[in-house]
Length: 249
Ligand code: G3P
Ligand code: MG
Image (cartoon, rainbow, N blue to C red; front, side, top):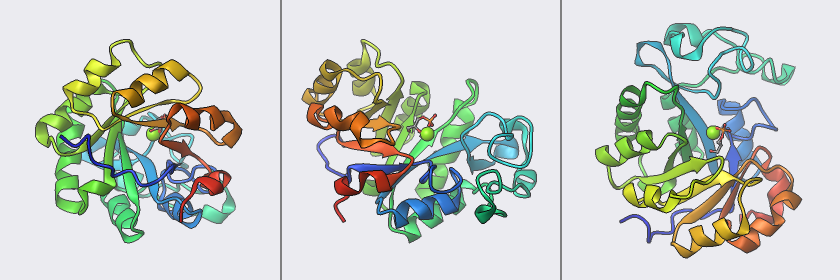
């Protein structure tokens, strides 16, 4: 079991890189998180046409690129042409949507830990999970610097089937009553949830059961002040600079 290990050596994880400091889910955003002192980043991996894997959050291209249309239908050669930085500011004109491979190389070169969130649109777990797991097997060196998370429990169950040594983290908006059975079934490492919906009783139960507890997405330290006392291990934030006093480096 992976549960006994203490791989999460940080209290502050950059969200989509550092989404308030640079255009989310780009290499610039990953670098911004590192510059802000974060030692772990969360990014979203998305399956597109022709089996391509890119770092992207939305089901459509419109908000975060100069393109438009449905993300899962765009071809790798076409998304590679898009600008993923100019929507954020002029400073980031020309920034690209990274492939998963681009991001893995960037993150490892910065010596960061990675929380890779598997995105899904309902039907494609059998397509995205084996592809992601194969790329991680071949291109990610240190298993102790990798957490795989998803709102889709079936995606994590398939990760577990493929490699039961990965550190897995179910994501919840509202934590369901049977959360513990869900975590046990995949030997999860962590429970990752919305800080604003988490109750003290839930937090203490998660910690009593021996799991890590991560909360997204808090950008104001005051909003999660109580959560540290309830046992929250790390905050996932768009702006790691706000949590400078929780950074230990
Ligand atoms: O992993 C935490 C957080 O990223 C989950 O929500 O929508 O920002 O990917 P979302
Ligand atoms: Mg995410």
